[in-house]
Length: 584
Picture 1 (cartoon, rainbow, N blue to C red):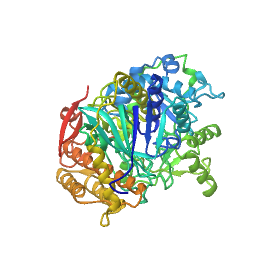
Picture 2 (cartoon, one colour):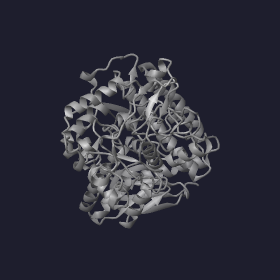
Picture 3 (cartoon, rainbow, N blue to C red):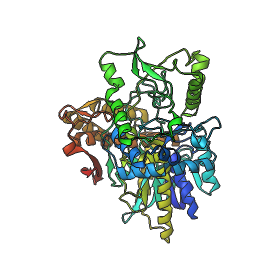
Picture 4 (cartoon, rainbow, N blue to C red):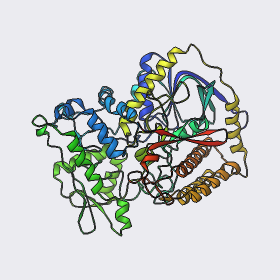
């Protein structure tokens, strides 16, 4: 590859960057308006994103169930705001997720995803369990092939899907998005997209720190999710929020446990967490008594009070470990045969769960009916607990006209998970299509960014003294783990940020193939995200307890009066600027 890299020009009305759940939903909805829609996906839409290998649950407000309970949409919003986010949440975006999630479930049904079961006694024949809230709000469903079905639906509606293209730069014209640039990770070509509107949906941030096993790629989050959207947005001068709420990855998919979590996740309704002597640390859960549905009304405030009390009473893995406790086990042995079969079905639809079950049964001779599974901590992800990402308006538009964001690229709604992807993708696709229809032609796009990307890629392939991408990635991970660990303080954060800046200024990459160029560009995204983590951590001068796990040794107390707000950072020239966004 050299300076004469082939450029592939592509014109589309709506460009969707990233083909995960949010990206596919955006494309499907945008296509309803008769506009040209293109998905640019770094991997392959049939198995990309956090749900690429399946998902077994989606939460939301379910009118035919919750209205009969007397439990309102406001009750769910308050459950999530208080129990999950501890007040640090964009309630207007949360309302979008809560109010539209059921409609998106019905859409998924129309796309061929199964949500109803003849053996269910729940109205609608659904399977609904507890997860995040005081009432059961989570559908369990057959989601193993979800991405296949979404890809099929997008293609059926005329969406052009270009796989194996990593979008690396946005193109702006007079304050409006006018296109984007991507690298073909197989062919090494530069894809020059001209677009009237763009939806950013590249997913979460991974590879910022080492996994617990030290094995590359041994994370729950797919390795391709490297915060590319945040990095592109940063370079475009957009504000990013919540980057400080990051804890080093301490959870792997390669030891004993897949992402099964605590009893309120995929291993319900039977599992409890027990200590080495069988003592119960977290009690088991049960199916909701659906016989009560029409006979009594729920008191939302009382159910929330009890729900919040369980969070306050329940010790975390980290607290127990620090006290010398452990090992801990996920215990399903008290479950009925019906419950255990239900859980195995659920695990089989959750990402890679069918492989996990196959391994446990065939290679370990494991049986949930008699054996206990060692319980490992869940990783505390930015996109989960803290919901880092782009700051957007209520219509999901960013500060750049016609640039929208969806799913895990949006900041401000902790643990919005799949319902956030479904609802925000749908809304962003609709808004992007509407704006694209208003624009008669394409804006003139400067070739400056194009030449910059060509030079960057050419330099990597022509370099003889540059570093391999893994060397740079390990350096960044070492810095993040050492300077932005569980305990932070201004001098260490400043020193870590200086070291990252030194890497950005003085380190060059080398690559021998388009695939390696992609990995180098991913590490560039990781480096940008790492710098944001350290600088945002230095800016938040307080400690914020669970679930955020953010502790400043020099500011050990939580300070809601001054810091119950989002910290937004943006790049102006070469300088980072910070601002507080009040919580409404």
